[in-house]
Amino acid sequence: MAVFKDLTTLHCGGLIERLVYPANESELLEIVQPADTDSFLAMGNGSNLLASEQIFDGVVVKYVDAHIEVSNFSTHERNELEDVSPLREVNSLSKLSNNEHSEFELVRNRFCHMQNSQRLIPAPAFLDAGAGANWDDLVQSAVSLGSSGYAALSGIPGTVGGVIAQNAGAFGSEISDLVISVRAFNRIEGKVRTFTADQLSLGYRTSGFKKNSDWIIISAKFFLLGPASPSTVGFSPTKTVKTKKGSARPLVVLPENELSASAIDEIKYQSLAEHLGVAIGDYVSSSQVREAVLELRKIKGVLYDPHDPTTFSAGSFFKNPQVAGRKISAAQLIAQSGIKLGFTLDGKVQISDRNLLVIVNPHSSPAESVLELARYVMQQVSATTGIQLEPEVQLINF
Image (cartoon, rainbow, N blue to C red; front, side, top):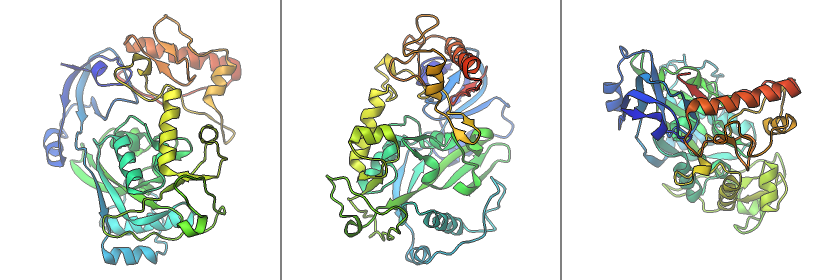
């Protein structure tokens, strides 16, 4: 039998009764049947899971389709995108039938919303990726192709499906900023559907997929974001550049399968700005941002390395809580509770010596020991601040 210990970045967890690796959509539909047991889990790289040491009496699906492809909309669709106007709002999480709007109409709606929100302007091309693709491979591809918007999300160890389900984020950016649409299979209904980001209930480290385990993500499409034009901001790949906040950025129309090499990203996070030696709101070449983010993740101990036990973690274990409509730093709350870097209850599982949000399991201790430390941290924070932390990590079979 397979074990979660071998499949997760926390290196713990018990036996799995049945583990399957469908390679494509047809295999997935053949393997996963509506009659399967209620104990069911779709997982990616196991980078956000803490599974108990008990036997998982059910089916675990690791969908391994890892394709990453760049595609262009048709000439007609490009013309439509260059002259967008709002369609009706699409708010239902997963109930809207594809018969009501074509996928492109839903994409067009999403495209219009992004323009109206004054974000980087999407180019009339997109990335299509299988749910089993490594997220950082997709980020590297996007940056190499010349797309803005991805570099701050470098180094996240999950799969494409996993980071969508989690709505993962880092350094002021989130997956929800980039998703066009998601194709998913409902194991109860036995049907495949395509949904836009508007329908997925994407929130802070959550989504409709995280709330409803009956869905298995098959693939997703992502915007390729065109940067401001060089003439507008005086762009140089080796210099920080600025543009007036709120100013319109021109639509970048891409030649067939060819993207700009001059991607830039706005710096939104203080520690990243300090590391780069710039100010929040400055623009820096995407390749420089990616390099800086990977360096920072390594410094903070959240760049996973299967050969380095000091990185055996699930990244940030705790969410930043919302208090009176304001997001509070969980790390600051933990520090206020008196817990310090390197803190341990058993001499094995410990708070990272580089990051208060990270629980490290360097000795591959049982999952219950990891959870014991997490609960202790939450109790201490609650006792000293009155604020209840919540785990960002998905707890399985406890």
